[in-house]
Image 1 (cartoon, helix red, strand yellow):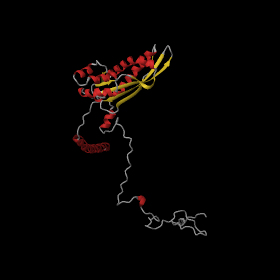
Image 2 (cartoon, one colour):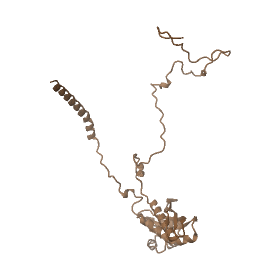
Image 3 (cartoon, rainbow, N blue to C red):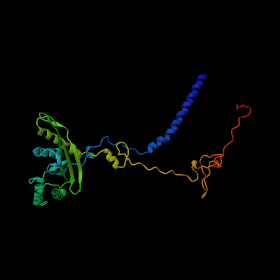
Image 4 (cartoon, rainbow, N blue to C red):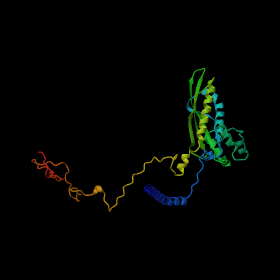
Length: 316
């Protein structure tokens, strides 16, 4: 009988606890129902959202040059320039982000511009004879509005050739620099300085051209690098994984004091009262008692020695 009563008592306690938990969970459930529902976004961003720019942009590609002071043999440089220039054009076209215009007289786009009166024949002749940044801007400034997006002027140079291996197995590395200019910009909109992998071949010219093609592909990839998701998050002013952290140290805010409640460090202690105005502060150095000079007065009074409790004999 007692066992059954104990079981009934335990069951009653469990039911009471269950009722209390249900009552406490009801406000949270009601608040959750009133909160706005947030739909989950797609897990991945589409490639179009992170592109350097949509579609293709026209670039007037100036002739490939050997940089001033470059460590390149003049004879070898002249031998590889024509093939290297074609390799550069293919590297830019392979990205799918450039439409290349070469500055020669019978280029279809430039010839049509002359026929339509957008540029003069003298301006085209100046560009073909002296293809420089200035002559390129003079022509592209008049054609810039005919395209969907603003145009570029590309300028690339061979900076260095590095050789290794043997005469039977020559190996080469090529370093190139590239610059993209806006038509109306003062300086370069984008620059790149890249070095190729090491390439071998049965002839030094083949190894150099293979290395140059690799360097041009690296430069083109650098120019068309997609926008990082962290840059988008930082631009939106958000925080979280992928956001660019702000490394500027935050200033330490001054503590706010309540005038009604003084700082405990400022509470007066016995023998530690703030000096009044125009009253010299006494010397707080350790006092020297006695002596001919009289010594300094003790600031903190000395307490008498403690007395032992009654009925306790303390040996002396």
